[in-house]
Image: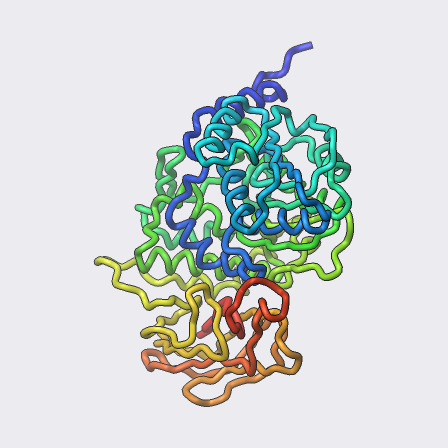
Length: 491
C-alpha cells in the first residue's frame, strides 16, 4: 500500500501550517483599503450593539457572558489564539470596562506562537490575565467549564469541527456564550460560481495597475480563483462552520457580510488600491453595495460572520439587517446555471456603473461620502450625515445625474427601538416622492424624473429618533434615526 503524499496527510498539513505561521511576522497586515471598507461599512453593523470593531465585539460579549454566569472571577477560553495579539487587546478592553479579575486560557498548538504571545502579554503588563495551553484544537477535550469561549479567525482552520463544537458545548458553563469572528465562505476561500461571475464583472472595470497579485507576484488579466486549503489548513472547512453551528447552538447575535468584495480588499489585490483616492474608494463602494443588495435578495450568501451562540436560546436574537444565519448557508449542492447568472446580472446591473478611471490626480471627495450607486455624482457635502453613515431626523444632499434617472431605491436601516408608526419619507427638490411607516429594514422604490446634468436635492427624513442607551439597547448615546445603506439610481 502506497503512503499518501506528505502534504495530503494530516501530519503533513500540520507541518505546513506550522512553517507558514512561523514565517509570519504580523498577522493583521491588511491593506489600507480593507480598513477603509471595514470602518465605513462593517463598523456601522456593530455600532448598534455598542461596539466599534471586531475585538470590542468579542470583549463586550465575553463580559456579558461572565455576567450571565454570575462569575466574579471568570475564566475564558480562546480557541486558536495564535500570536496572542487579539487576546491582549481583548484583555485590555475587558479591564477598561471594569472587569479586573479574570483569566483567558489561550489554546494554541504552535510553540513559537505561544512564546510570542507570552512575550506580548508581559510587555503589555497582562501576564497575570493570560495563560497558555499547547494543544491541537482538533483533538482538544475540556477539563473544566468556562465562563465564555471565543474563537477569532480560527474556526476556518479546523478539520474536526464536529468534535470541536461538541467539546465547546460541554465546556460552556450554564449561561456562558460562545463568541465568534470568522470566515464562512466556500472552502479554501474560493468563490462559489455566482460570486465568481460578479467578481469577473467588476474585474473588467479595473485598470491594469490594480490587477497585480501581491501574494503570487503576477498580473492577472482575468481573475484567477485558487484554493487556499491546498497548503496547510487555510479555509479547510470554512463552508461547514455555519451549518454545524446551527445544528449545535442557538444564535443570540448574527452579523454577516461580504462576498464579492473579498478579493479587492484582501492581501492579494488590496495593496493595489489607494484608500485616499476618489476612484478607488468609489469602486469599493460599488462592490460593497452590490454585495449588500445581493445578500438581501438571496443571490449571494455572506463570507464573514460575527456571532454569539449559546446552549440556551435567546429571549431576543439580533440579526443585523434582518439577515438570518439560516438564510446565510450556501448549500454546496446548489446548481447555478447560465439563466440564473443572467437573471442575477440583470438585477444587479446598476451596481456595475463604476465611474471611469481618472487620468489625473484624484480630487477631494465630499465628506462624509454617501453610498450612492449608479450613474450619479454627489455634489457637495451632506447635511445631517454622521461619519459612520447614521443620521438623526434628516439627511439632505445634492446629486448630479450622469444619465436621465427614472427611479431611485433607498435602502436604510432604521434605529432599533423606533416607535411604531413613525414615518420615513423621501423628498426630491422639495416634493414628497414617497412616505412609509418606518420598519427596521427599508427598501423604498421611488419613481422620479431627474434629468442628466441637472442638480437635484434629495432629503431623507424620519419622524422620530431613538437613543439606544436610554432604551437599554446599547451604549450609543446619540439620537439616531436611520442608517443609509445605499441609494440606487436607475436610468
